[in-house]
Length: 79
Image 1: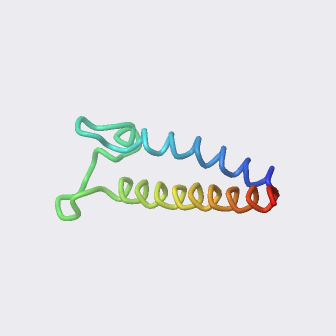
Image 2: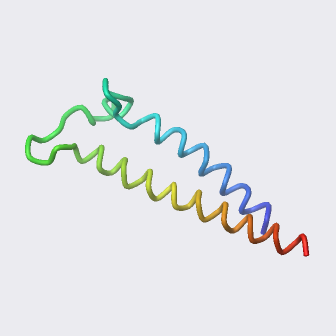
Image 3: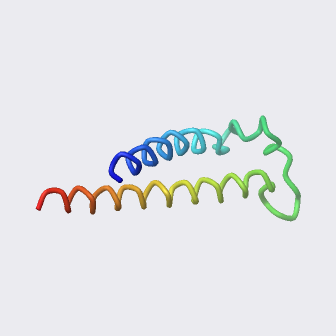
């Protein structure tokens, strides 16, 4: 169980790095390469950017949950 959770943590960490780098900063970002530069005048942000935000939050929750599970597993092994 510890090995599987560690693998999930490593993969989600790497994916978080990629997703955060894809976000648009002050001068644009990698998301512009995938259509993020074309935004609607009503929405404020494009569909691609909103989906990227949702995916980043979801991966962040998986990352956080895997850290909590690993902490509980290691606490159980110590006693």
